[in-house]
Length: 288
Ligand code: NAD
Image 1 (cartoon, protein in one colour):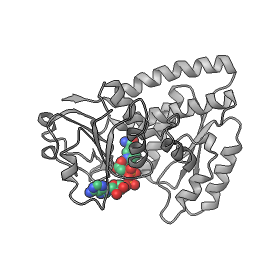
Image 2 (cartoon, rainbow, N blue to C red; image 1 turned 45 degrees about the horizontal axis):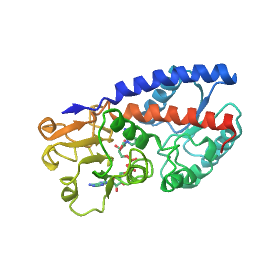
Image 3 (cartoon, helix red, strand yellow; image 1 turned 90 degrees about the horizontal axis):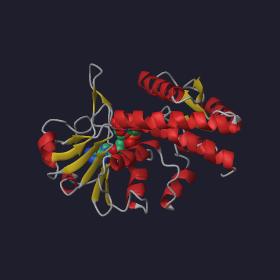
Image 4 (cartoon, helix red, strand yellow; image 1 turned 60 degrees about the vertical axis):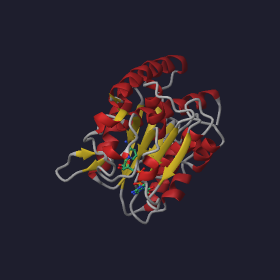
């Protein structure tokens, strides 16, 4: 079984992006800027945001980060509007999840689609359905890059995705089933209302899980030689992280697997940076 080493690939891509940022700096006289808006003081959210800031600075981006209170939705609206106008911010994100009861859809729609570094605005999500894959949400983009780097064929294969979130499952289904050079798969999308998910998983050539339940899927559920991509990041009591897939016994069943941590997570951050560079370049070319 091959370990799909997202940490290593993210490092390689970040080194390339650092060179690209230096070139862009020379050719345009400007530095691409990433904005990050975070609401509340959830410690897990803080760790994710700190890591994004660290990686963005490592490749030479300017970073504009703002923390907002979790009892004032309008403060977030104002911050989004100010980042939309900010001339040195080329792409920005609102770190999810937002507090329960907040209008996440409505808030994400307030982001200027030409600065939508996460690709979660409905316009950018809709573009995926029109086979425009220039700005993919970061986690689906990271999965596609990992499969590409390790030469894992996707076209014509049966990909089973568990989880239908707007940030992972559904956009990934659109990319892998779409007319993307790394798409053209036959995709089955499982969710919490799927009856007997095991019947689909044992048919999968490639299985992707983003359900957020530690060790929900076991080695014996897979077809021999399948590839498994584990998006889940679940904190166990004591603070250790676990994926959605139980690693025990995978070695004998799978041909390739993404570890948690060190698989999809670092790729997601690298793809957020790539999206920011793309938005910067689009702005320089006057494209929307
Ligand atoms: P979510 O938490 O919004 O929703 C979970 C999804 O799983 C839902 O669509 C639900 O229908 C589905 N589901 C629940 N139980 C299921 C079951 N038994 N069978 C099939 N589907 C089931 O999803 P999310 O925001 O995509 O997060 C999922 C996991 O991925 C979490 O652990 C999260 O931390 C992690 N995550 C990791 C990254 C990364 O970069 N590695 C990025 C985003 C999310």
